[in-house]
Length: 287
Image 1 (tube, rainbow, N blue to C red):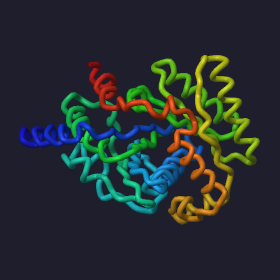
Image 2 (cartoon, one colour):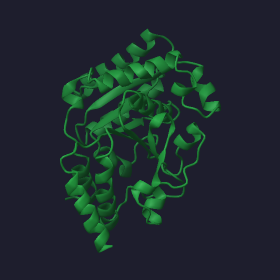
Image 3 (tube, one colour):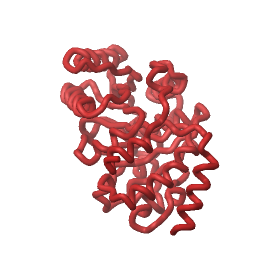
Image 4 (tube, rainbow, N blue to C red):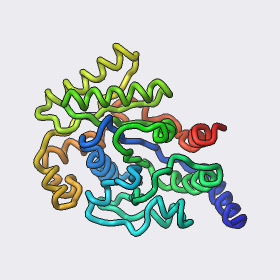
């Protein structure tokens, strides 16, 4: 164990001058808004722009990523914590040249890390951060007290809503809760917009409410149309971007990824230095 730790330290030192991946959590106020589908296809769209992307399914025990791609990972994050597998061992090759860490089943206390588990995760994740441009965490629906600690660690948050009033209200409540704990760059995406006007107005309504009641600025990342390609691709267990690259929803996700990768939605947000590991230490160990 001591030799392994020393090995990790040497590898970390060798990579200390490399840039670290941007960490992004994708969340929603409630389930059923297409969050996991967005996470998967957004990851692939970024990959198609030449970025190295790791998608981490954080809906532990109830993850959708395996289902959406029609493949079951041989190992998951559970194997890292319970079976001493390395993070490298549990990363699987996904569609569209992305990498995936599966959420697995049966683990309920991922966020309750003791110091030993945290230290091991921190050391190995440091190496993972150096190998990617973006690491996306597909969070479970809603926010718990435990998952909140993790949300405070990432560099940026993408919140998914739909035009439905209940979805907008749930997204607002989630962002209010996050904002009360820490100011983190927030991006908004409207999914299942019936028209372009519908998508733009949904985001604008949410942005106006956040400014008026919380004094909180957010960035409109874009909207995805309500497109039959999505349920059809889910049935075929294939990401919609690969199922039909010419579909309206596929073009929309590519536009969003292009704007995001080119920092078209505000450089002051997307060019910040990554503090994920420092935040992990602060929020999980209180140091």
